[in-house]
Image (cartoon, rainbow, N blue to C red; front, side):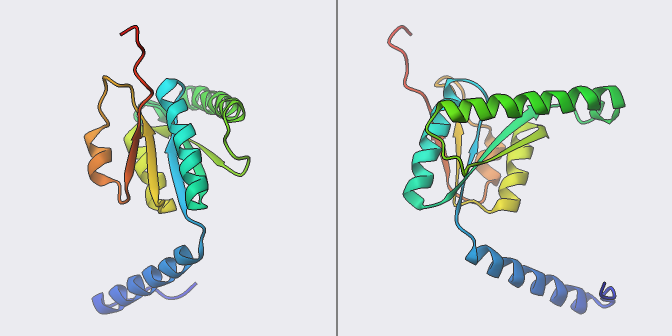
Length: 165
């Protein structure tokens, strides 16, 4: 482990070097299309569109599902056990949903817990996708924070309106 830089300039240079190394690694990676998925018609639409776009870009597909939790409660061991069970169940449902659609087997499935927007932004920050695809119902809006803070284009996939409405 290298010694910790002492001066402000040394810290800035070290951070700059880490950034340059990260940029070189990202430049060699296959592009990523991130799809935020829940279980419902909007997510099914987002998964289908995300899959088609990943193929068009020649990109890896990363499917993210968020198990909504209250971070204050998740510290308790009884809640953590329940949360782990919910994560496991969500992963199984997500795998079944992807098998039912035309999602490539190479798609990476990620199940996170927490708040939806925060979890999606965290994954997007780490993975640096070329595109984020989210599904939303026709009467609902995309969360403003997601629109504002995501650092790549955002595609909003909406299922067609039913003729019964």
